[in-house]
Length: 389
Image (cartoon, rainbow, N blue to C red; front, side, top):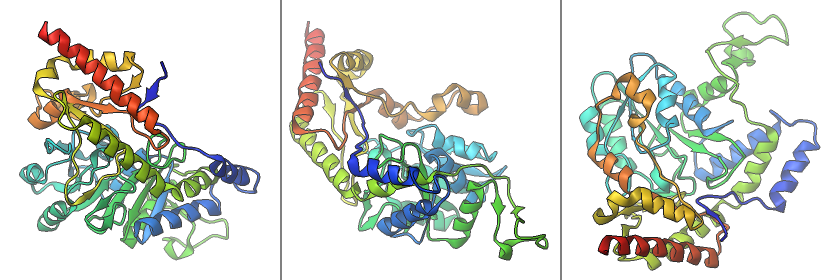
């Protein structure tokens, strides 16, 4: 029985050729291809500026720094996300608050966020869970009303749309963060990006990526001592990405719309096959959203909630590389240690105990998608028999 992972990169000969060209060239780290990728991504998304990083996590860290998140500040985000979304703020000694989610999309609920805002709040970070955009206009209204920054964690959502705006345009936010991990819509192996329309944020992103150092004479605080001179203005990091990774990124970006269409076609196939089934709920797509389907999360119906562990195990035994996205961040031992010991968000908890991500990736053909459907139904039918008898 073939194993079908929940996600998989698509690398073709064009991608390999573009990477090899750079490897055979003069520069393999910070050359012209980094800027070429940044320019191409900004143009695709419709943003003024783009800075690429060596991971989605470092992109988040850079984005939070760029809006001045610091000790004593509070930022609000979703618990249904990878831990990096919250970790990136704690690195700057800010405090995190988790808001509850919408039960159907898994996205942060703006009404729940509103309850958490106080005078120490500086930033809201909604996550476009699974590739379904959050209701950005509602978050923008909140941010404007309380004079807060708004950063989109769009690591799941490249290629998606909110109303008529591409995710990444930063039309509604101060900055947008992407990830280019191999299971995402395009890959650079590891990598990330921040897009913005704010020049000040852009300049800070460039600095934090390179140790907080500038070599631009117009930015020097002290007199230049020669052509070799540089200055460190912030505590920064080596968050640089390589030229050969960006060559892969440029090549992958050309195929992004194709990849998203293929994902949406698979999701449509699943939706038709799984419609009105007695076992689980399928993903929704709100009127304001164009879902890019990084994940295909199903949610178990009430009757099957007590059997999630067995269902998950049987799906794996039947060759499906299912996963759970995510354990609420506040349940992690580290977060319990810093103050979330008795913390509980009812919708986030229910989402966690019911969610299983089925395989979805652009190279999946119809035969493989049918196999996922058949194996999934087989497992649930087996579980149902146990319940009856």
